[in-house]
Image (cartoon, rainbow, N blue to C red; front, top):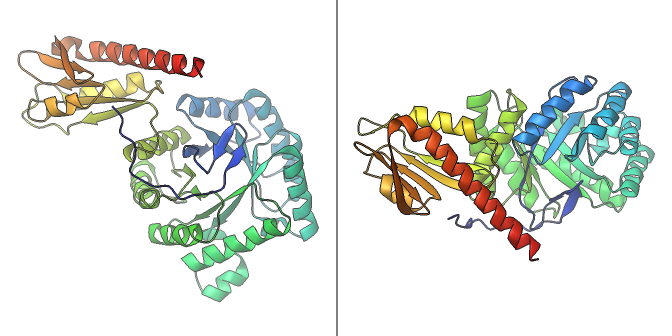
Amino acid sequence: MHQPSPIQRRRSRQIRVGSVLVGGDAPISVQSMTNTETCDVAATVAQIRRMEEAGVDIVRVSVPSMEAATAFGEIRKQIQTPLVADIHFDYKIALRVAELGVDCLRINPGNIGREDRVREVVAAARDKGISIRIGVNAGSLEKDLQKKYGEPTPAALVESALRHVDHLDRLDFQEFKVSVKASDVFMAVAAYRQLAQQIEQPLHLGITEAGGLRAGTVKSAVGLGLLLMDGIGDTLRVSLAADPVEEVKVGFDLLKSLKLRNKGVNFIACPSCSRQNFDVVATLNELESRVEDLLTPMDVAVIGCIVNGPGEAREADLGLTGGSPQHLIYIDGKPASKVNSAQLVDQLEALIREKAAAKQALEEQILAKG
C-alpha cells in the first residue's frame, strides 16, 4: 500500500561505498558514526552491530592516530557493513586504513597538506576502489575564507567545497561525494542548494552538531526535509548528541515520511483523546519496541476510535480501530477480526510479524524469478 514519492531527485553521479551505491538512482542511504573510543575494538564493534540491527547502511569511524588505524583494521575484520574512516591532517593514516580495507575516506584534501600527499592518498583510493568524502564544516573553514567572509556563510562553505573538488578534479578522481554541513539550518540549506547546482557528485546531507535527541531531531528534520523535498541528497546522517542507534532510526523515519525509503514498520497513530477506546499511547509504545527489529516495509494504523480509524485502516497493511466493547482489526484494508484490550498488543504483534514474513517470502520469490 506504499505510494511512490512525488519528489524528483537531483541527477548525480553514482559512486560506491563498499557494497552500497550512493547517487544516481540508488536509494538514499542512512549513515551514523561511532562515538566509542576507536582503540576499544570490542566496544566499537558492539556499537556498530547495534546500528546494523537498526538497519544502518554505512558507518563512519574516527581514526585520529596510527593506533586507531590498527584498531580500525581489527574492527574491519568483524564488520561487513561499509566503513568510512574519518581522517584529518595525517595522510599516512589514510594510506594505512586503505591497506586495512576501508570503503571510504572522509578527508579534506586541503588539510592533508602538500599536493604530493593528496596525490598519494588519491592513488591509493583509486588502486583499491575506495571512494572519498569531502567534508566541509562551518566550524572548521580555512583561515583565508574566514578572513574573506568574516564569518561562516553559505558562500564560504561552497567556495571551500569547490576548492577541494578542484583538488580531485586535477587528479582525475571522480569517486567522491561532498558535504557542506553547518549547525545553522538556514546556512546549511542555502549551501547545499548552491552546491547542488554547481557539481554533479552525490551529496552527503547533515545538519552538524544538531543537538540532543529531541531538539536535534527537530532541527535535522527541518533542514534535511527542506533539501530532500528539493530532491537534493544521496546519503545522510542525522547528527545527534545521543546513542548513534537513534540517529539511524530518525534517519529512516525522515526518509519514510517523504516516501523516499521504506524500511521497517511505519506507524500511523492518533495522538489520542477522550474518544479513544484503548490506551493508544501505551499500545503504540509497546508495539514500536517489540517490532523495531523488523526491516520489512509495512504501514500499520493504530487509531483509538471510529472517527478516523476505518479510513486510516483501509489505507494500511494492517489497521486497528478502537471500538466498544471490542476493537476491529483490518488486514489489507478489509475488516478481519475483533480483539479485546487485553490481547491487543500480542495479537497485533503476531499479525505484523506474519505480514512481514509473507512480504519477505514474496520478495524472495520475485528475486528468484529474476
